[in-house]
Length: 382
Length: 216
Image (cartoon, rainbow over all chains, first blue to last red; front, side, top):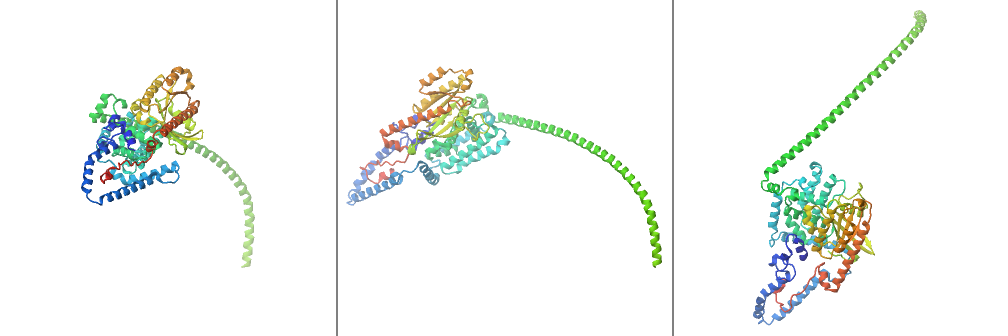
């Protein structure tokens, strides 16, 4: 693992610097004064031997010491055997690869969750300084816009939610303890980036789009202790998840994004070196100007948008007007029709009435006659 | 990361290199989803794709890593192709420039990874043969001179892509097997130590006093 991690961080350090100072061909470690583990141990032993030589002599007078020594040897042997059995000595048949990986992942999570507070950003390395340097670097680049990076995010408002989620995920990485959880955060962040990209692009995002978006996300989110977190994952993560697999791909891209940010210069943002310097040093004027321009273009867009809407509204109103007039005309014509029908009907009714009246007159007369007869009867009855 | 041999499953990492518009994305999408400029593509991204193969009874997991090909990302190449087993270098046959870029990448890959990596140089867009600007002879002789294989493909017409990947897988398997044999002949101990935990009890027995226990 040591070998691997050293190779991984070799991005920024030349090969020679990493090698053991004893020139034995293995990689050295700054914590061991630039020596590899073997050379360091040999040197430590060389320094330690005189002390050990003295001790047996002074203790050698005691007759029980040899027995004590023997006992110690036996104990030590037993301990080594136990450890051996723990790791690969068990006689059980070899487990399938998938199961082994799963177990490795669980063990990694368990161990690294416990060890996190001791080994994360350890004092023996200069991770903290590098964190600060990276953070400062990112802060000094706060003027970079998506347009400069060529990020094809469609509209800030549309994609903001998803880019915002990406920010949250990448910042969340610092809060996780196990390397695999940190890796999962990187993956989640990448997924959000892809989602945001898919909104603007109908075809699947390629690596160029993804990397420039990721650079933008890292620049805007400025995740805490990014360098330490990445080194922690490199040093203590499982190599198979780091080197292969989807999460490995995303982590590699994050490494690329950080390397890109560290070496960022004018041409990479399609700016002239002078412009770049101006942004970096004078910051405010170009930045403010740029912002103002942005605001102007934004308001212009907004105005155009409003204009378009106004026009649409006008058209709608005209259409509605026409419709209303049509409707009124229709109603009028219908009214006329019904009126004429009504008149006709009325005429008919009056005609019928007249007929009725003439018949009624006859009837009334007869009724009168009948009533008279009735009256005559009643009078007689009383 | 070489192939993990247990269970006869090989895992290979293949990087995809090429300039912006040479059709890298179309190439992998055609291979992994058999689609070209399709609206029904299900994946959100074409930058990391996997494919499972079965070659002569051996399972192969292929992970295809797309790399950022823009000029400004050029310096980041080594981060991408670390530990890769194969590289597919794509150029557009109608674009002389893209072929020059391929040459640069070949140099870099050979410098960083030596001869362990299987190189494929791919001339894409052969459906546009009438606009060809890179001659077949030039490309093939160049490929031969750097120990790479040359392929002609068209993502649009689905030509030569299946062959390209199959051939590459076979070559990577051969390389992996040769490596294993080499490891088997040499110190098998050191070979296994790279994949697992190894406890070497090399504390010399001559100094059995307590001090060395804690230093070990």
